[in-house]
Length: 344
Ligand code: SF4
Image (cartoon, rainbow, N blue to C red; front, side, top):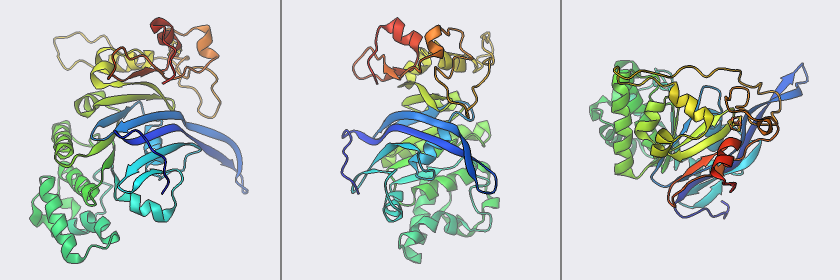
């Protein structure tokens, strides 16, 4: 484990994270280009908070999460994570170290129908991580019963199979499994998007209650802004592999500054049927991820594009007006309007 401190209130600090997937051709798998999935992403997560990563499909949010979990190797950048034993760089740990770190960092997946093995019982599914860490059969059974109660399921369901549960109950099993080893950080990858709307709120409320009870920290990935607004303390908006805006949730929803965030928010219909909806789809082309983009990646779709937008990639800068607030934006127009050019 390395010694590479991060601020004491942080659990995760990501700097310059980049992933370019090689495009291989032919028998010899010659690399003929790259898909730029994530480019120079930096953010941090405070202990006990929920940070949302939001954006359209293909914006790089899931690849970012997978690099943090070390399921995908980064092309560049660092992922510093605070464990019980100290701060480690996930990009540099080996397999033996990774096993120890896995206790502290777990994942909840999108689809509770396919993420649970249909041939395994509840005891086997929820207790599987425990077996990998030396729990006896008796200890594992006791812990699984505790976990089922914690997520609102009957502890007597140990020998049932996933098909006997509803979608919401299966996601509760996924959450119980993620909690088995008492982690500090949970990466939630679209955890409610496969569920009925009526069940989504129950699962989100369960995640909030567990956070309060167990002091958990969440990195919460979603494309649905109403879900993000319900559960996140701060939100990072991703577009074409970069963070374009990062702010406290209230600030982001009440005072979005980046043209892409504004367009995303306009595209969400107002739940009040008496209000006229003025939104719509975002027009224009998404750039080709196999080609290097020199300027702002939103420029082909942006109504405010200027000459410099096509020549210089805007950096994420701090535009917060009050001390404790977070508000960072990557846009030349916003930088000029605020007169702030402080690097975030
Ligand atoms: Fe639009 Fe330019 Fe801002 Fe990009 S940098 S979002 S093109 S105004």
